[in-house]
Image (cartoon, rainbow, N blue to C red; front, side, top):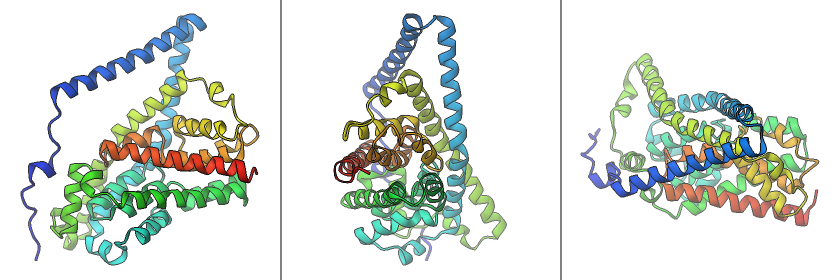
Length: 360
């Protein structure tokens, strides 16, 4: 029997209204950060540059980098949104119950290889994960899929092979990306959905797990053309919802690349530890799509240690500026902090271990 969605309780269905003081502090912090960025830009232009012409050049650089990142990522976000819409209409929660394990370890392992089925990059994977969580996907599977899919998918595997061939970097990228994603998925499996997911996503996740069906489920027996139209309508909603985070992340990444000279990041490339940290910072700032980042990393192989290049290829697809902001559309802020910190620490340890023990 199909049950109607019950009236959502205020503490679960909707997030509490922010405190006016908290909202004021957020606006104040935003204004301060913007003022600091503008001050740095004008100071650099008039002290170290040639005044207004130099300032105009930096603004052009910012716009060029922003458009490059945004245009590169938009098709993949659109593809992920379309997959998300198709999942919403054509994938029933019973299929998730039947085919995917509930236990944490098997679930994390399955999540680590789901990118083979859903070949999406770090932009497209976010709406797909959100939709799967709304279908009742266990936490461990979703987290492992979120972090592993940008690397463990046929397109990225092929591009990495084209850049580096069959060798330690190619094998290390795939193996360590999978292992780190599984470990983080296992860590998150100890949490409850309400501690990790946003209230609206958590409510849908709870309803799916309790087999409380909504209008999307009632489309199951509708004509095919209506179901396809509904899938694309949902895809449009997901795309517009995630696009705001993509725009903000692309602007922040462009600002960082404009204000922070890359020569400062590239100055120390041979230290066993500092080189890994620098390449992680570079991966976070550049926000290059995982489908093409292997060719960029190839340019650093002579100046940086192998462990640092590997950290760039493992950490960058998991976490960068734009994907970090997109996480906010699915997860609570504390969970996003863990999603950034855990891959950062694990990939750092991986890169340092590689440099100290292998040195290839």
